[in-house]
Structure formats: C-alpha cells, structure tokens
Image 1 (cartoon, one colour):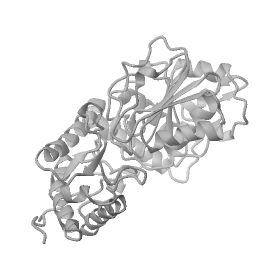
Image 2 (cartoon, one colour; image 1 turned 30 degrees about the vertical axis):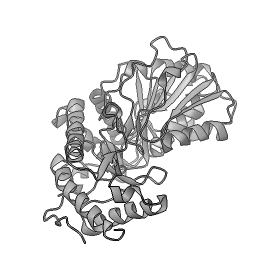
Image 3 (cartoon, one colour; image 1 turned 135 degrees about the vertical axis):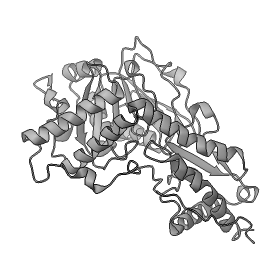
Length: 388
C-alpha cells in the first residue's frame, strides 16, 4: 500500500532531458523569426549570422584572443572525431574515461584509428581516474563532465603548463556551466544542444595555438574524410573559424544558437549561467539531504556535476533486488513520471547504474526542480507497491 500523497502541482516545464536539453526560459518559436531561411549560408547574411555566433560565443566563454572557434558538422560527436582523426598519432596518447562517452572515444582511437601507443586510465561510474598518472609528454584525452555518470573534473590543476603534448577535452555538458581553464586546454568540443538548450546536428571545436601548430606540422597516416579536413597545403583553413563552415549548416539552428547566446548575455553571461546551474544542483542536494530513498551517483561533492545530475535509488527494499529488477523499477518510475507529465526523459543512461539522470543546466528553472522532487518521492512509492 502506498503512503506518499500525490503532488498537486507539476513543474511548469517538465523537460529535464540531458540532451537535447530544455530550451531557455520564455522561449517561443517567435525568437527564430529572423532566421534567413531559404538563403545560402555562403551569402553575406548567412556568413554574418555564423560569424556573430562565433564572436558572441568567444566573448561569453572568455576565450583567449588567439584561440579559434569553429562550427562543425555532427554535433559534439563530430567535433570530437574531427579532433581525434586530425591530431592524434604524432605522440603516444593517455586517455581517461569514467563513463560511456569517454569509453567510446577510447574505442575509436584503438579500433578505428588503430593506434598502439595508447594508455587507458579507467574509473567506475561515480568516480574519477587518477589524473596524476598523466604523462604530458604525450597527448591527453578526457571528458570534462561525464554526462552519463554525473561526475566532473573539479579543476585543471593537474594539467601541466609545460606540456609537450596536446590536451583534448570533450566538454559538451560542461562548457557554459563550469569553469574551464583555457590555458590548460588545447582542443575543446561541445554541442549547442547541451547547456544552452540549442538544436542538434552542429558541433563546436575550439583550438589553441598549439593545436593549430600540430595541424600545420603533422599529417596523419590515414585517409582524412572531407568533413574532417582543417588544413590545405599545410595551412589552417581560417575560414572555418570565421563562419565559412565545412558543410551546409541549418540557419534555423544558427538562429536558435544566437537566441540562446543573447539570453545568456541578459542574465550575466558565463557567471550568470554557472550561477543558475549551481542553484539547480543545490535544489537536489537539499532534497537528497532530507530523505533516504535517493542518493547521488557522485558521492563526492567536489566532483559532482551541476548539469547532468545522476541519482541512485537507495531504499532498503530496492537494494535487495536483482540487477534486472532494479532496472525494471527505474524504468517504471521514469515511465510513470512521463505518463503524469511531471518529468520527461530522466532515466539513467543505458550503460550506467540503474537510476535517474536529471538535467540541471542553466536553461532549467530551480522552481521546476523544487516541484519535481515530491513527484520523485511519490513515483518511487507507487513502484514500490509492486515489489513489497
């Protein structure tokens, strides 16, 4: 028999997906009315929109003046693959992974590029590997935030200022929500569809001068797909980082990205975005502290993500279930919340421990998270009735 009263009020915006993420507060399609639809992205109007997106992004992120930022195909995946295929192979590689996407990059480097001098450092979900083992005479590849584990790198102190190799960072669920020490990063990738709630299909690639030097001085041993090529005759194709994209972008998506950037500027830029994400995480931390049925997958607060927040179910009755039944309980809980219109898309990633994943990036409202938590309590109590 259930004992938790069904909440009377639902979140105003129940979109808590970790990608594509919720649109900014107040978003309507009217925000996209200035998109130059039916026009070429190579026309002046298209180039100007793309260049404005690049300029506004660099200003909000506080990129060093000599860093390049380009819009590339295929979301964050495309940006990461572009970097791996174009830059790796000149040195040995240290790869750090503690969740599914980082594991995927390791697989690509070993199985697709077939590089042999690869050291892999692994940690379980909820933990970080030992970064002190990094050898900065080699290239170092890592994610800043484990989207599927809720674990983030707390700082860049472990990265050498006198490194010989490159640091290559997948920061798709971290950038715009966490501090990125740009002097420690040579290559960084992300997609619009994460923290800024943009539309999919486009990635962003950031390069330091050291990365550009590698591109201009090193030619990989393998054939390079056209959409990955960033150099011509041994020189960087600067147009990529000025708005001349490699393939045809969606100008509707570009307009949407611009709308998100303009909104960010109205709330205080990067500091405002980080503040909102931290406030959202604090809502869940306060709720977790007052009950025993849920806990953070990232038990260590210092490495806990403030965007992709992953939760475990810790009820006594749940702990004794088989792994198969734990997965069933989690899926039933998620389905019930979806059916009620209280929360959409908050199931844990398929390779992660059974539980929940709630997006807390800047486009989510803290008040909606406050309204969500009693629904989590109620839904778990409903599902419990099938097992107790």
